[in-house]
Picture 1 (spheres, helix red, strand yellow):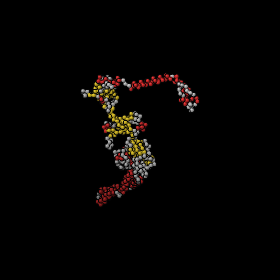
Picture 2 (picture 1 turned 45 degrees about the horizontal axis):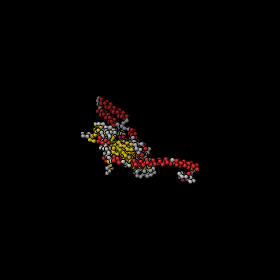
Picture 3 (picture 1 turned 90 degrees about the vertical axis):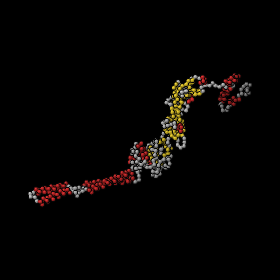
Length: 528
C-alpha cells in the first residue's frame, strides 16, 4: 500500500509486525500500539519542536555562564585575599607518645626436637604415640613411642645426653630432680647433684604414671641381685646355727658340783678347828687337816674352769661378720638393679606446654633426624625498631595492634634488646592479651602494625600544636587565643593565656592554663 503525504514511514513497523517468531495475536497487539504512537506524534508535532528548542537554549545558557567571565569579575579575581590569622582548635582527650613498629605474629621459640636413639636396642622404629600438628606437649606427656618405649616430656632446658643411673652426678641430675618435684614426685633434694636411691625410685613412679614398664636395669644386675639375696639367707642360717650351739654348750661347774665342793670345804674346816682345839694338840694331825682344807678351797676355785664356750662364741662372731658382708653385697646388688633413666626415653623442653607445629616422624618409619618442630603454646608478637626508639621502651610497657576485623587489641612488652650480629635494629618481644581460638587462627603468621605508648597522660587533657606555643617576656609559655573572625587579620581580637606544657608528642603538646581561660574548641593562633 502506498503511503500518503505527511504519513510517517512504517517500514520499521512492518519489520516488527512481520517478525516470524511472534504469534499472530502478539503482532496484532504491537502494531496497534505503534500505530497509536504515530498518530499522537502527527497531532502534536509543533509542540514537540518548541520544547526541543527551549531545552537547547537552557543548556547553552548554562555553558556560557560557566566559561564567560565579565571584565569586572575578572578584575576582582586578581586582587590578593584579605590577610588573616592561621588558627587551629584546642583538642581535649588522651594524649600519648608512641613508638610504632611492624610485628610478626607467631608461636614463640620454635625448636626442632631430636631424640637420642643410641640407647635404643635394635632399630629405632616409631611404633606409636605420634602427635598431631596443633596438639600440645605438657609435663609427663608422651612425645613419641620408639621401639615400644616412651619418650616422656619433662620440663627443663638441658638436653638429655646420658643415662641417669645410681651414682652419677651433674646438672642434668639437678634438672631431673627439679622436674620430678614439679610433678609432685620425690626424687631427693635438687640441691644434691647426685642421682641417689630416691631419684631411682622416682623413675619407677614416673613410668607408672605414664603407663609404661620401668626401663630394664643393667645387664646381669638381676642375676647379681638373686645371688646376693641367697648369700644373705645362707649367712642368716649360719648365724642361727652358731647361736644355737652356743646356747647348748655347758660352761663352768654344775650346781651339784658346786655344792659338793662347798661341803668339802666346810667339812675340812670343822675337822681342822676340832684338831686345833684339842689338848694336847697333835701337830701332825693339825697340819694334815690344814692341807685338806686348803686343797678343798682350791678345788672349789678351779671347779668348771675346763668347761668353756669360747669356740661357740667365736663361731657366732664369724657368722655375724659373714652376714654383714652378705647384707652389704645385697645392698650393692639392689642399687645396681634400681631403674635408670635412658637418655632416649626423656625429652626436656623449656616453657611447657609446647605446641606441635610440624611432625616429620611417621609410625612404622625409622627415626632419623628431627622428629618434630615445636613452639611455645602461646602466640607471640615480635618486631624490631631503631636503637633510638627501642631505648624508649622497657618490659611491661603496654602496646596496641589491630585484629583482622579492625578491632584494637592490647599486648605487653616482654623484652627489648640489641639485635644479633651487626644489625643496628633492636628486637622487641611482646605478648598479646588473651585471644580466642578463632582470633589466633586468623592472626598466626600475619604482620601487624604495633603502637607502643612510651608516655601518656592520665586521662583527657587539653592539647595544642607546638606552633601555638610562644614565650613571654618573663620566659613563661603562652598561647594566643582568637576571639574574633580570624579572617579580619591583625584586626581580629585575641587574648594571651599563660600555660604549663606537659607531655609532648610528634604533633601536639599537653597544656594546662595558668593565667586565663582555655577550653576545648578555642582557636589558638599558629601563624599569620
